[in-house]
Image (cartoon, rainbow, N blue to C red; front, side):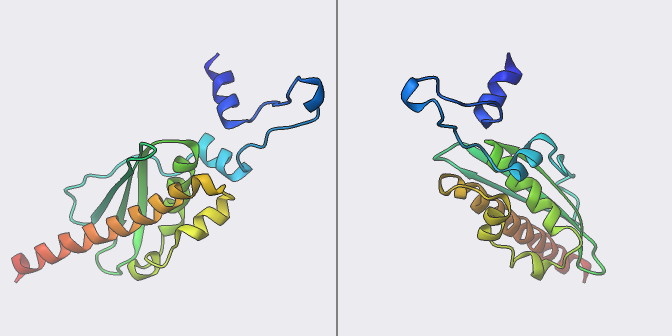
Amino acid sequence: MLRLALKRSLRLGPAVSHTPSAAMVVSRGYHERVVDHYNNPRNVGSFDKEDPNVGTGLVGAPACGDVMKLQIKVDEDSGKIVDACFKTFGCGSAIASSSVATEWVKGKQMEEVLTIKNTEIAKHLSLPPVKLHCSMLAEDAIKAAVKDYELKKAKAAPEQE
């Protein structure tokens, strides 16, 4: 029963209207990339937020109730993001956007991940206009995680001297 409800909400099953005048109308669902990242999310989990090499971005959209936590683990010497994870409470598009974001930030320099735009995520996932806020949350979560990491480093700098 739950699986059927999930398929209906994601519009994975047949969605043909049974009214005679609209017998051939088929409802359009999510793009296959959204469904893939929703069914098989990458990098779900969390790191210790007290770890000085971890930056945490926590963002939300009050209008729809989506909340996204994205964390990055940075190699102190190279400045590269060596790992990333997320936890998202929200719709399939929000989960997919988080999953894509964690894949895209891994192995990149801090400055480089700040150039990732929500429009790129939305285009990759073929998000409809009504779901663009999900990709905006992912971009904001990346920026918040980088900012958190940089704040931790700035606070630790005076202690090291």
